Image 1 (cartoon, rainbow over the protein chains, first blue to last red):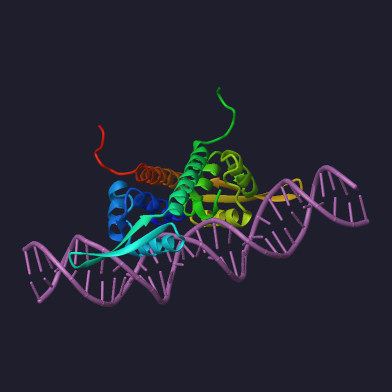
Image 2: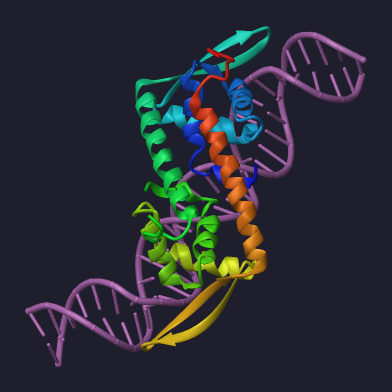
Length: 112
Length: 112
DNA sequence: CTTGACACCTAACTAAACTATGCGTAGTGT
DNA sequence: ACACTACGCATAGTTTAGTTAGGTGTCAAG
């Protein structure tokens, strides 16, 4: 996946992943790689700050735990996060459809 | 259309529009608005520098003309631009499909 | 006892779109 | 005449957000 394609779409992806069940940061990264079939293999430096942003925005809440000597910060979707996810899904659809229309070519009435 | 959604996808859109026939900058903006059904109503400050970038990258070539007292800079797609467009279409498809898979939810084998 | 997976973090850099503004012509309205 | 809008180009400066690159520490395997 080339560089900065997901600018502006990262939050959507993160919210969507956490929406299917609370996850800690590292697991979010793995899940994203898994679901996208390796298209999204995000560096930690991308994901962790984004999760912090989302928590500060009230879309996620987090809690610490310790599993086999390793501390984890587990995130879950809040209500606000859930509705934000809905809106972002919506605008992703609009966006991708708009791109599709542009790529489809000339907008003439054409052969009906 | 919300803010910075098209980060990283603008070049694709511009190349696609110019690919259907040479256009000057202002016309590119209109065409984009038209084809996207108002989803993309880009400010000039976004489009002009991008066109310059694309020309510098060798994807577009430009020529000046004057039509009814107004000077126009008309862009046309180069060969390199054409193949770049192909690649960018490709990676857009991969990207949007990957997003789709992530949004679709849990990747379990599930009900077959 | 080093390497790699797991698990977290952040400062500094960078790319790229946006804001704001400028210039100038032509047409329309008052 | 004067103003306003559409047309048409341009660019400096700001902002946003992801990347780079480093740091800390645990645990299992070779």
